[in-house]
Image (cartoon, rainbow over all chains, first blue to last red; front, side, top):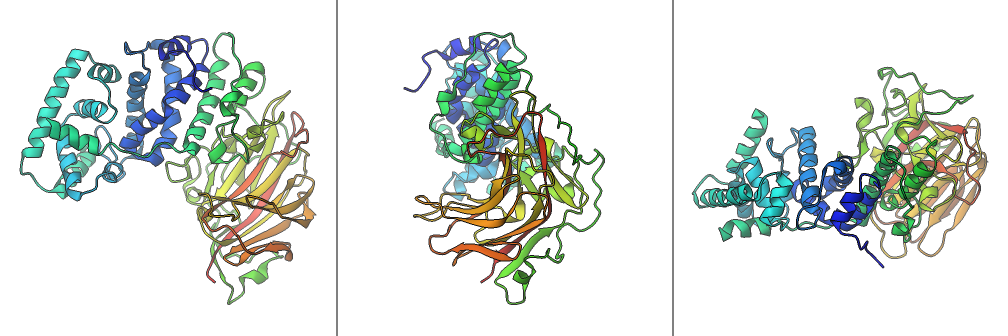
Amino acid sequence: MRGDPRSDGELIAGLPGRPELMGVLYERHAPVVFRYLARRAGPLAAEDLLSEVFIAALSASSRVVAHDSGSALPWLYGIGLNVLRRYFRQQRPAPGVTGDFGMDWDAVDDRLVAWAERGRLRAALAVLTDSDRELLLLVGWEGLSQAEAATALGISPGAARARLHRARKRALSALEEPGPGPDAHVTTIYSKEQAS
Amino acid sequence: MNVVDDLISSSGRVPGVTPDGLHRGRAALDAAIAAHAQQVPPVRRKATAHWFSGLRGRAIIGLAGAAAVAAAAAAIVLPSSPSHTTGKPLADSSAKPAAKAPAKPTGQTSTSRPAPAGHAATAAVGSPWRLVYSTNFQVNAPLGSFSGCKISTGYTCSGLPKALRGQWWAYGDGWPDTATVRHLKVHGYYSPSTTVWIAGGMMNIRMWRGTGTGTVHSAAVLPKAALGKEYGKYVVTFRVPDPVPGYKSADLLWAMKSPTGGTAHEIDFPEGGWGLPFKAFIHYPSNRPQFAANASFNSSWNTTVLEWSPHGVSFYCNGKLIGSASGNVADVPMRWVLQNETEDNGTAGPAPNSSSTIQIKYVAYYSWAG
């Protein structure tokens, strides 16, 4: 028999006195959290970062409650975001990594079949702020609801709704502009990195 | 807006986490849980070893997760046992770690220094082997240097002096050793930061066990030049000045990925308990031939050579061929691991408060150019 019958909320509530419950959360959510990390940092780095997310969650467990949806994932994504930021800060100036939010474009590009798609995705995301981009990706890549993504980013559901609308609009505008080719976007990202 | 969402979702596919990665992450988490558990009020806790009941085999990266649960349990039940990050080596009558001073290069580390007696003939002109890396450890690395060992940073130990960072890697602190994976009563964890240092022209690996029923602190170090290579000649010169029963070494080639067909997936040489004769083993899926060397892990210097080519595997000890095998040799890249850990052959393991040191004074890797 697999799986612990307790909900994420019950497990989180028990963590302060029983840290081993984090192991249950790991068994339950590690594959999904790994994908979250791998989409941004690539699978190799994600394997190392995976434990860091849950270890950081262990340290923060006394200050958290589960999201209304009952899932621990929004909380874990929020911690994962901090782990990624720290990782990318330490990695700089690794080629292909932006200096703001942090994204291993090589890891992302590997999943895009056509060169044109690389440029399009970068164009769409490069115009967004860090938090708007992450919000868009939490919904688009991780499949979170707006409310869950809001929890992950520590903002209100209303703010998430407004930001998401704004992010999609900006991204669409960027896609529709006859802008420079993909190499120019790479240059832009590298320039930001060097400037930061 | 759909075009934006479609574009993003089309790039969202990633491979899932590998079993290796999943278990390794779990091992690290369990070590943290163990440390955390010592800081919280004691409430009902129980070991959760059933989570990993399917794991078996040698403690390597791929199977690392299993037994850190046992570490958590041990730390909970036995708060006196030292943690992996705070434990200090116990008193040792024979070998002392180098002082914590800035590492100072004292010479060339990757050299063509004449090989120690016993295998010099293998470097003859016309040999199918080409020297890729050798060292006689002329760059010091104080105890604690083998720390921050990670895969994601390109198999590096961030604590090492720069001159050595490109040469050596180690299984990270807290990874379970073979005895732990096998749920043996006396077991341990790799702890390169508390066991390994380089000084006096030697790499010293001083394994130790904590008080009472404390765990064993061990180390598995890997020459990076031989990481992920297909075929090669592997040379190591070593001794154990004061061998203590219950510790062992198993230098081995371990496949980076599963070999095809019925080929060997693990080749060990030298392997044996400290103070005892060592052997060579070839692990095929269905059998495990072995060859005895007329030498032991004791105070005598020994040089072993493992030759792995498309034609087969041969083992030499102090210049003498002790065995060879052909057919169904490994056909995938392997890593070379100088693995030192808790004895896992069913004996009691090392005594509490014990320690023992292996000294390695020469390591070389040759690629196959035949």
